[in-house]
Image 1: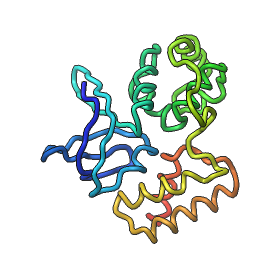
Image 2: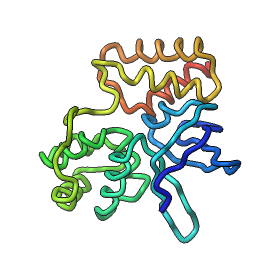
Image 3: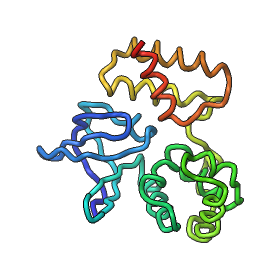
Length: 201
């Protein structure tokens, strides 16, 4: 088990980063929210979970230990693999997932790509006693709420990490915000893709 990696951020992309650990570049798959906190050239300490398969070793990185814990608990439900667990954390915070499972909020769970109503019911049934209720503040927090536009900083940093100038990134974020026109913001990954399309034009 690799509990965390610590080193300089060597590269960052839409779905992962490379951390230089004493000359060895470790590829870490992350949620957009986690990637938003990683800037190329900066030092970073990223909690991780190593997923071992017959044909691969994949390292997943998280914003904090709580996010990693929830990621690992999610995979104890049948039908939930690491990719789906990561997608769930890309859409919802750990506390939002705890709340959705505890209150049997199927609508919240089906907002995650790849989870239908039956899958959401199974997740609630299997994880209700394992995840527990929300902890600390922000019990109902959802990723990138439109009201606070927290997604703007995440998308802007993601674009800068991908090599765009801060000026271009700001312009793309403004264009995406204009398209939303007050509507509920989709997951940060979708917003980042929209911003990249704006820059490609």
